Length: 421
Ligand code: DP6
Image 1 (cartoon, rainbow, N blue to C red):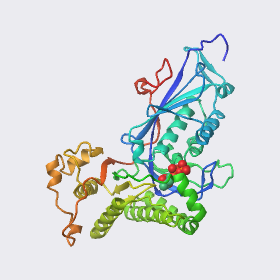
Image 2: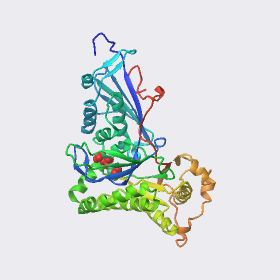
Image 3: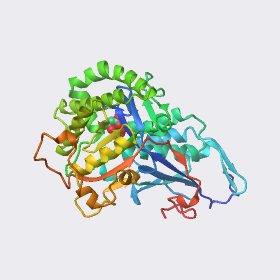
Image 4: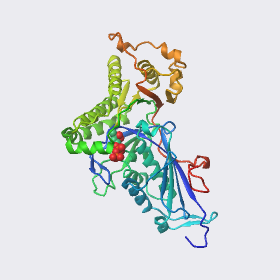
């Protein structure tokens, strides 16, 4: 930067990234600091209209240090994961020129320029909905754009991976595979898109955010303990996952819901079995999670072919994937029958794409009260309804990957001060 240039400029980029849900789970690392997994995993990217992180990154010669605000609160960037992502992105930066604004940044200048970062999740961080996946994907994607990084999305995903493993899969929309890779440097441990979100657009996803008072073991700590103590994990990554990955890829290619659902449920259940096989055992699911599994299994059994797949990450929330829109309506009717809203209104209880609620004939509370027990319950009278066990539902679908937001009004940092607005 030549001295005569104004020191007042601030260069800013805002991006939006989705979160993702694994249908073949990542659980266990072979390298803790590079975040290299012991097995391949496959995920579905969730529609960022309903669940996403928005991040603004800014650079200016007037900034005195790297700073970050998450949901409006300043947080430390000192952690190794942030530092690794910042270092990797900076080392790939290229020069930037904007003659009109008098901005000229040479490749080597990026090392000395400080960053301000503001990030916001459009869903409660505390709800346990993979906020770190969307967060690191968005951070790295936005920084890559700001710093004119010329590498492809695969290489960008390998940087996001160093923030949080599952984040690498959020760089793409639709159906995504994270390849374990072989190289010790981790450069081939990258995500790739298997199919875009439009390939299989029948699928509907309903997330049950399950009420929980329990402090959960973090994924990072949990998987470390599983690697150290679980013999089932050894069997899983050597014998089970490689076959399931191939079958899942084929099921996605052929839009074969029966196989997709069978594998998704089996893999979630095996992941939680590995957690139980860990010493000391880790319990991520609670009674409500188990109840949801039972209800879904009973329904699928009654129908003869799976109508819905369930999967649970490192927490009690259920992610339910319905075969199509009609099935999603029947699913929502069941969910609201089993878990009626504890309050008097539906609008804060069913979020996201609420048109499913209307199509299912559930406009008002009286419609929910009038719901009949699902047929698969017929031999279980009296049945119990569980108001209060689910905090809320989010209706969504497979969605697109990260995007740059060109609308300046969506920036989270003030363009004149570089401080959250
Ligand atoms: C159960 O990606 O959160 O959600 O790499 O340590 O940050 P770190 O872990 P993280 O683990 C996700 C585990 C999982 C399964 C999955 O998303 O594949």
